[in-house]
Picture (cartoon, rainbow, N blue to C red):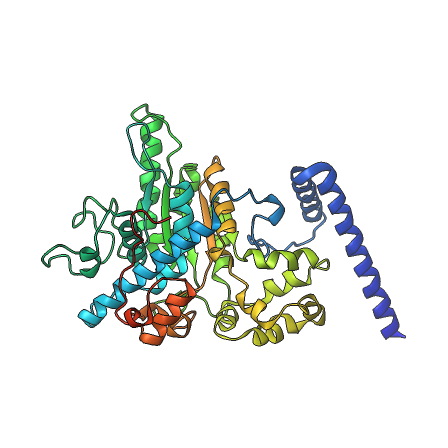
Length: 450
């Protein structure tokens, strides 16, 4: 009898929950998001006044902040942008591999830019403003370990030559080279701001944005829409300088400041947060400080599943996983993902029954999806009255395959063997033969190439 009563009570509660959700959906459709916010605020106030101890959270669900139906149309040519990005990936990797063959132990980083390439390329192609006679331009604090990617892009543009790439981290040799990290004193025509040691870029960008506002507010600088961008890693946020002044940015309403955090979940020697979620942790920290937070967690491949998930069970499962599990999924096959991520709930297995294991393996994280990143950047540059942080989930060593994609060793990966070079070459469609690929040659299309 007690068991029957318990089941009956559970059914009533489920029905009650559905009725509340349907009512909320009605308000959303008729009154819009603003009315929903007001209603939830009134309900929260009433509950507090009635003595209900509501749990505090500064987190939103572990999904993208911008839903698919609110994404702006992507304005670029996806294929040509992908092609350019692939060439940059290759040259960035080749630069580090060649340098370490010539001088073992010279260092450099392959995996950081590999994870952040889309974050940078969407900025370069659609948002970053250069300085000219009519434009003050943006100020960009590039993440230090991603420097090979910035050099590789400059090579593709013809701003630096192959000899300089060959002399990466050997700037004193004949013919000139490239500094390890952003270094305005060593390369004043190339770098504007130093960002290494880790943590210096974020705090300097805050004070740069504040100084820009100071000059504008006192009539010493013409007001503009110029932004200060700071690119940093999720592990870098553990440096005290990285988050030490974020409350100042919110207090001063620095809407000219945008942080982009590359959340590839790995640091120098292992996971950033193995048993929790660094994205959720950072969201709470920045929201608590008063920032506008935009999460880019899941790629477009996940949108149809989220649309089909009428019970909220998929979002529940997304909320449950921790970063250690996310990293495990990267190095395992689609069958493992099916059984261990979707397999916890039979309803989720039903949701992906028409997906092959290869389909599941190919489903991207949000930081590798140009449309998701574009939507986040567009919302960030349009935000008024507060600074914005974009937290994008990526894969460290993206594209390296067995050489280190998603593995703990990837941060320290400096060399690739012949098979690994061939894999990288083929994955990104670089027109280099099997005979030549072993030397990791730089590649730049001819001047008149389409």
